Structure formats: C-alpha cells, structure tokens
Length: 211
Length: 121
Image (cartoon, rainbow over all chains, first blue to last red):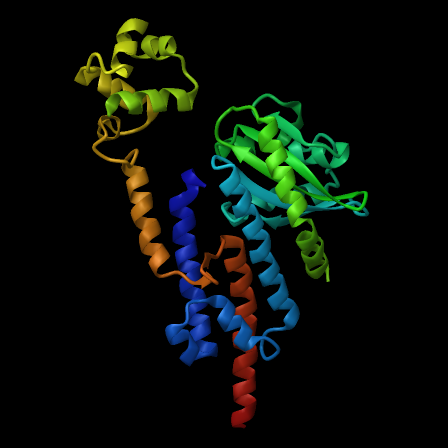
C-alpha cells in the first residue's frame, strides 16, 4: 500500500531479521546460506513444527498468490480475500499480500458485535445478496462505520465478488482502488473467470485452514 | 516529454483541460497548447502543476521516472530491504505471514532448546 510502504517495508525488514535469528538458533548450518523459508520449514516439519502449522503457512502463501494474480489482472486494484462462515455469520481474513497486518483488525470488532450483514461494506452486500457489488466508498451507505478506515488508506472504490461452494457463499474477493472509478463488465467477467479457476484450490485450502 | 506527462497526470485525476486551466490560472486554450507541445509552460505554471499533482517538476519535464522524493526513497528502501529478505519459493512473504512464521518459529526454538537440553542431560 503506497502511503504505508515505508513503514511496511521497515516492519518486514525487522521481522525478517528476527526470523533469521530464530532460524540461526534452530538450524545454524541451513540458516547460513538458505533464504527460502519453505526449505527451512520442510526441514523442521514433524520435528519442532507440526504438519498443521506448516500447512497453514503454506496455504496462506497460496491464497496470497491468488490475490497477486488478480492484482496483475487489475493493475490499479488492491486485492483482499475473506472467508465467510454462514453458521456463525462471521468473517475470517484469508489473504491480502499487499496490506499491512493491522488493516484487518476491524474484522474482530465485526465478529464480536455479530455485526456482519448486508450493509457491511461491499463484502457484506456481496455475501448476503450473492452478487458482485461495486461501491463508491465516499458516498455509498454500505460503508457507514468503516468509511473512515478505508478512506484513511486512500481507497475510494471497492467491489466484491462472492465465491461459492455448491450453493453456499464461502467468501469474497474484494478489490479496492485509490481513485473514484467505475468497474467495467469485462473486468468483472475477467475476475469471475479467474475465481472459477481458483475454486477447487480455495475449497481445499479453506478446509485445511479450518482443520 | 512534458506534454505527455501533463496529459497523463490530468487523465489520472479525471480532470478536463478546462478544470486544470482554471486551477492553475490559465485559459483552456493556453493549457491545451501545453499538452499539444505548441507552447512550453512557464516556470511558475510548472510549479503549480507540481503542487496540483504532488509530483516533482523533474517528473513533469521527464528528467526522472520517480514521481517525487518520497517515491524515490520508497524505491531505494524496497531495494535494500528486498536484498536482505527471506522468500517463499521466490515470492515475497507478506507481513501477516511473517508474523505467523515468527510465532511458529519462536515455539520451535523453545522446543529445540528443550530437546537439546534433554539430549545433553
């Protein structure tokens, strides 16, 4: 996210350093030359890291790849993905590789207050109406209490595309723009086509994460 | 080059030529002559464009591709941090996954210390 980039990079740099120090402690020989964290986790899984922990991290990276793929298709878009649990009417953060971690803190608030509904931003409307929802963040009534949070990050347009398992909505991809703009039919069709391609992978990952 | 940059910046912001002209204090026809490269904008107007779009005069003139000092710092910092970063099969690791990794590895380091201690004793 452009206006947060410097802070985000500094935080990531510091986190990288701390992780390297931990790897150095656990496996000093490998840590000396290997920068691919997957190789490190492969070496540690079923010893000091459980298979489940490995799978969750692996799935998070895979979900992140899907978001990056969509960002490539819609170059001025910032993509996030959330899972929706119909039974609890709660939302869970799936992936958003280009957003700071704290951006999604407001999900806890929504879940605690059991406030997720039709008027909860473009994602709320997309989940409950089971359709693609395009909004102008500044003026749409859907953004009510969350408008300030999104505009603080410079977002002016937000659209959400639900994805389904059989007949149930299990989540949405949301695409945000820093400009006030419409969304073309071709863009919606392109994103929907990509999401259909991801569908199988998403079911699998949703189940792995839930376990 | 400046004529392309002026056009690009104006369209990005969704302004008409008339609107930009009004904002920087010239007639639409004068502004149009900058975009068509028929006339060069005077220094005063370049400064106004720079303020209006939040980019440096150098960027408008095409002397750099970095829009402003903040962007240039951001690019350099990204390069420096990128060089020292861990990755996942070549992919940059997002912040939320780094936090998760840190927690998992802290636990792992503790288990590893316990295991080593037990082996020694």
